[in-house]
Length: 110
Image (cartoon, rainbow, N blue to C red; front, side):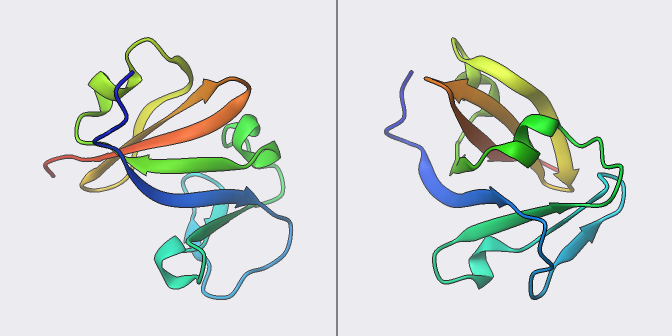
């Protein structure tokens, strides 16, 4: 695993409290904050009642890295959430390393 070309993006924290400036991702059944608008680059994830969005992410914090090539970054790692596109131009996946969750994010053509 080569991480030298990975860039820290944010820390994701599950919460049950309403946060300032939440973005509603209706298709995912959750609210999230923009980590770029917080002092410590925190993305809060708050599920709607009955949300089925990847339970592992709603119970555990994660650290996100921007990677140049998502498929290459995932090689040899335990994938816990397969790649998907939460918004145009972005593809993400979640992996587990030593019991901790990492988000790998890559920009992709729209």
